[in-house]
Length: 242
Image (cartoon, rainbow, N blue to C red):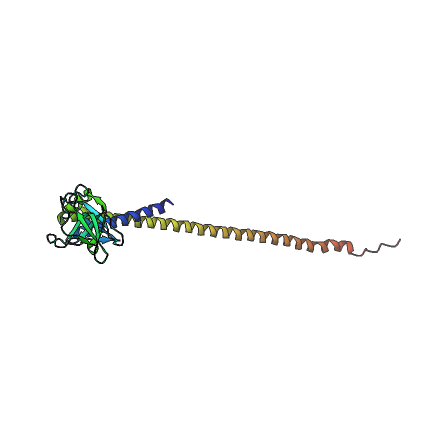
């Protein structure tokens, strides 16, 4: 039972390592202006302090890209800015008001918490990427450092590959140990079955031998009876005349 638990733990650890590795790769190497997404969630890093203190500069943020949800005042959203100064790049600010466009779709007015005024350009619903659901300044610092390939490969790629190889080797060894134990158990069971079969055959042979001995004794006894009775049945010799 414990071996199966260890196998599950090893598999989960390997999966977590792979997921972290993929997230890191997509975050570091996604071109500017695009957001990497995995299973409906986007990962990115802020470049300015316009949302401080809620989102410190260079923070790592996770964005829920499900645009079927309704955004409300107070939500922090990531969007493609239509501001001429930003040229459609991604921006992350808080919604301060919502109004309806002529077609009934929502239009959001946004503002950075650290900015004195609202953003000049409103944000139509079609430009919204998603809502911020997670912020980590520490992970942002790590991602910032790893943006440098000279640090990324020796500090992350190589150790992760080594760790992954070790985990795979350990998992394979554990699997082989379990298979070996199962084979040994099956072999012991087969040997025990053979021994039991031989024991039953030996008992049957012993029983057959006892029956043969009993039959032989009966036959010998039956043959001895006529010889003993022949003396008694012989005619008497005539006695001499007086």
